[in-house]
Length: 169
Image (tube, rainbow, N blue to C red; front, side, top):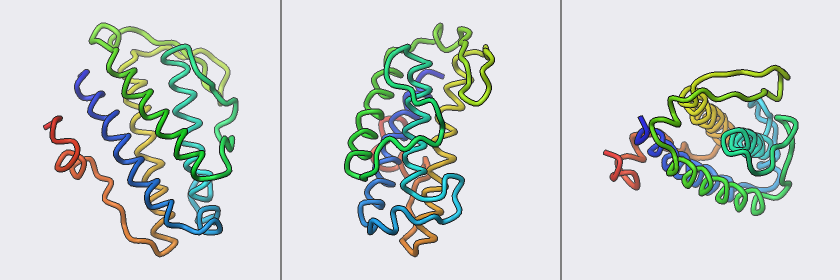
């Protein structure tokens, strides 16, 4: 299971790079255009992904900044957002590299932003949600880009495994 999560950390970094490269081709108006995603625009969706990752990583590690709301806008400009995303992806990669099977199986307790009550579950289940959440919202990023008339992105895990992710096969 440990290798599985390390693969997802690498895939996450790769997929984010694909989305950010596509976002860099947009005009400022397109980047901020509400296209019906849960957080509206690509700008706000990418900010949400960074917000959520920071919240989870603070829970997982006990360090780092954790915004208090899920819709916080951490960065207005794409360049700053992309740099922060790169840093967070490297942090995720490094942290998953420190895990062992005992840590994954251990109970993990946190307090959700949306409900201030403690939740306890095995770490591996929280980590599964963490990576699934990223994939979910990257799908919304893909939809937003498509709604803007941009070419479809190939974000499926299998494309990662066939290219940069060959070490995981």
